[in-house]
Length: 340
Image (cartoon, rainbow, N blue to C red):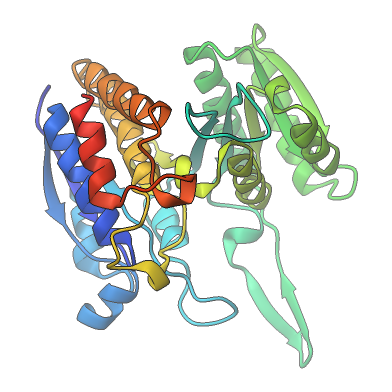
């Protein structure tokens, strides 16, 4: 495997702990990254006076690759989400959230294996809000033909390359006829013109959520706009054990950031009980990404070894407490390393 330059953002709360565990596993597996550590979130605000300083942005801009731990986002006030700022700063328009059943993690459903592809820069998360008059506020949902087309193309290409037979668009075009209607038209055009061999269906999102909790195995790739993707990806995480067992990636045409999608959990920070699996799974996605984007096919078997190792550890009951096990953060990392 080649050596790849990447930015490491440990994050807030449990972030540094899970990051340290993941780095230890990556090193043991032979993953070759040359890390430049930078800060973001509350810890960065305290140290550098900004939740997303230029030193962090500049490092990502130069290396075009980053692994990021969880960062705190205030509710109902305070600073804007670090995640949203990063996605906009680097035009990371495709959020990718694979969700699959894991051995040793008992849930209501078996054999779940789907991927949520979420448009990451438009919709209600565009941040266009204002106070019309005292007591009346407005948030604008933004959709562009370019934005809708590029995420549709990305989603269909992903399905074709990963040999996933069907793309399903979740929408609310029966109510939001212009914005969601545009999203649907762009997806339909990409399907007809470029990927006619991929099965395509559209589902109104409320009915789609009902179908998900009835039988998630009927879906393969779910394609949707920003807010819907945020909600549905967490819903799907609940089908397989929660946010602690699903990875996340934010990908653009010229770079990518891989992250744990769970919160920073400051109440358990420093206690060696946090589950590092979500960030580890994101690092596996990162390895598969550099195999393609950086033309380093040797990264793919490294990713496969890590995935096989944590699957084996989970199947043997070597789990952290959130999954019903007894291992701490560091002990889980050691269990994975022992099975590489």
